Amino acid sequence: MRSVDSVNDLPESRATWRRNCWETRRRQACPMSLRHVIVELPDRPGSLGQVTTLLGRLGVDIRQMRVLSRDGAVATDEFVVSVPGPVIDRTLPELLEEIQGVRVLTVVPTDTDSGIAGAIVAL
Image 1 (spheres, helix red, strand yellow):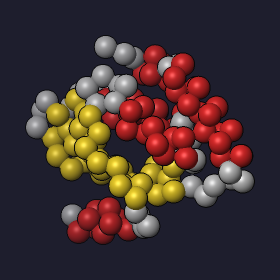
Image 2: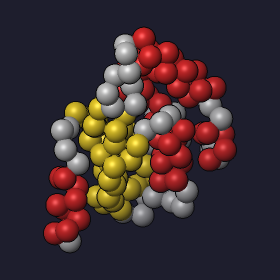
Image 3: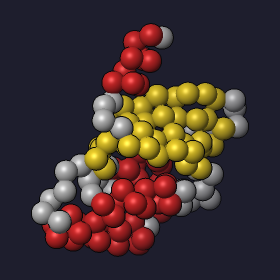
Image 4: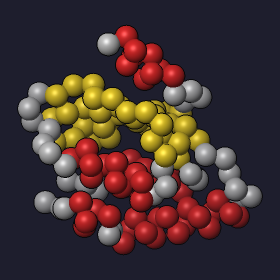
């Protein structure tokens, strides 16, 4: 099992961030793209923190987040994120799944983050 520190120190994550910066600069600073992401992760303390820490290390801005379900073993969480460049955008599911027990269910483009906000207000 990886600890939060080892997730943050993954050499692949640093290399991916460098490639992303290089490609983003080469493409004249591509605008950040919004993505709707749904992940399953172990329902235990620290799991969500590992996911959000990795996103932060990659330069991904979490716009909104909510817990869709929990059953004591697995939690399903929904995010709207702003992805900083084309390399991170293409590799985001693989990078998240490097965290033990995390499974990415969907990553789809979105043009707004109001979907989660509307659901939160409805609760």
